[in-house]
Amino acid sequence: DIGVTGVQTCALPICLPAESITLLRLRAWQNMQSGNQVQALALYRQIVQRLPEDEPATVNLALLYWKAGQRDEARRLITALAQRHPESSTIERYSREFGALK
Image (cartoon, rainbow, N blue to C red; front, side):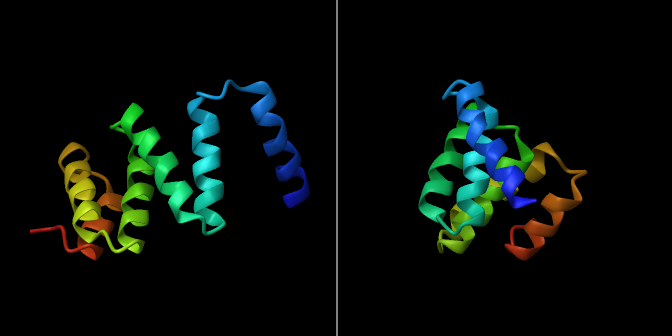
């Protein structure tokens, strides 16, 4: 229910500190879903900088780079993730899609 989600989302900034990774994730996802790619990129960069092993955030960042035409950067991120998480079917799928598999 979008109404309930919106109310919960509005309450999070009150409950969580501004530097909260949970709040960053929420804002990044919301921006990505609403098509605000510039803001989503900035937020996902912050998350990945703080948590370089974060698979979902790094995949989302790579997707945003791909959509922005920054294909080499998307491939670089996916290739690095594939080295750290060779068992991940998600990363394997994007490695193939981005042409990062050799």
